[in-house]
Image (cartoon, rainbow, N blue to C red; front, side):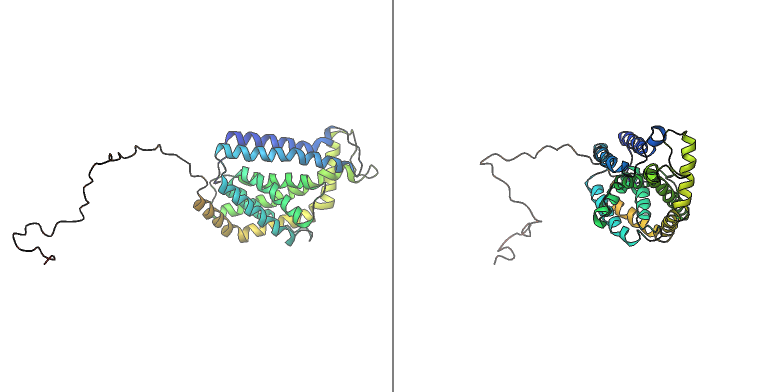
Length: 300
């Protein structure tokens, strides 16, 4: 069960953002595109400019609905920084990725809205850290956001080994999906028009889908994507129970889901008027009570 709930307003923002993002990947299937190697270079800044208002709208929707607060934003920054530091440890080596397992676990604990934001911020921060800024960055951010979003939408009642097994399976599935979408963003513009796997502008959708499926299987599914899937699944199995427990403990201590209530002010105590004598406080029984004569004890 996720710690941060998803309000209807947040769900609408997430649905619209996902639909718009999916259109940026799939439009060449429906609108003929010119297979030029630099075609996506001019499109990437536009995608990035569209993403920023969406992310801001998502944060504002979460803040206004109570789904996220300053403590959750601080946790988002910490986890994004950790992911940015983890990514250089594995990127570029046979598809090994060290960033997705934490994204899956955090999305599971903190919910789909948090996972969506963490995916975008993690990839953006790691790109700045590793000098990986390029036309591919907005599409990487979108794909990673979907990974975190999907983890937050998994069945809530899973616990123990079953939960870890489901998260490991989801991590492997998401790794293949990430590779497929990242192939889709550049495939129509990378091979030209002279190969059997090339995108054909204006061809039927099923024809181009077949070409793309073969291209993906040959170039990445059995190589990079499999390495990413294995790394993510193994990391979740080995570190998942401990990381889930740590994230849930941090969420309980921060009380992310505790409602904020304000009690009405009570009446102020009456103040004595000027010149009114005030009785001295009595700290205990008078030891002199009942003394019949002579000097009271302690005063002789």
